[in-house]
Length: 318
Ligand SMILES: [Zn+2]
Image (cartoon, rainbow, N blue to C red; front, top):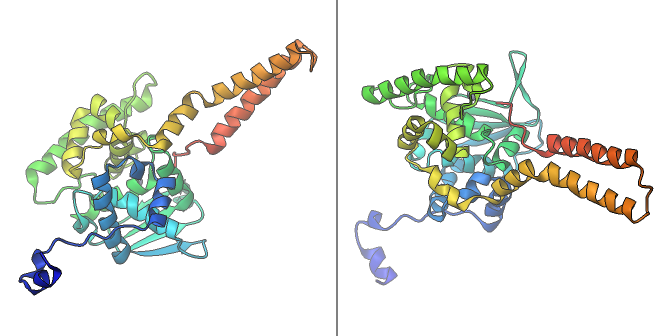
């Protein structure tokens, strides 16, 4: 059909919507920083990018401690926040007005934290945001966590880990039952090292935290949550309208790096150094003194641990 014909026909609203997409540079930011974006199937990325454009139009960004809001901040926050609403749609954030990015760690009641959120505003510590996005399966993601708080409060301004509408009685009852059932299990996992729970123990700190912590697990430890706690996975699958276990087929480069570094990184490092020292000793380049051969690998083991401590995920702040 010719374009002139299309333009002359009524109603114009029947034309397919023009989906706004990201530029190559903006996509590169996400490829470099967001494990979750890398894991999304292609059609989800298209939907995400359209939602991000609405988000970036509707929400004001401010910084505290930085000289300016960067493109990296806007794109990364918008992307991670909009993953949560891929199925829910932008209306879920209709009351959100402002995102504040802090250069320094936040403090509340004398304790350090990575963020807080209400219906209208989200404040986050930027280093924690970057760390949370980069490591896609460590169960910590500040942006997902804080925007889950926004969703939780969207219906009734109350952060109580029940994100469904106040008038959906049956659904709310279901949420209450699952939370009442899981709290003791998370408490038990906190008390006994032999027990474990996919959802982080931070969920126990207040009624508001279960939904946000479980959201992090839903997206970052999807398969583990589905296998160990299928009733929670199903509840979140129905709420978000998403099935992130299916996305794991396309595991991100970041996830592979994390698994490799966590499992083999320090060990490989120490083994290589030990091998090199041994070969140098065997070839007579250095004296084959036992104490030296013992000391050097030990020193490198310490360096390996320090390396992991400095560069590995540091997700304890929320
Ligand atoms: Zn929280």
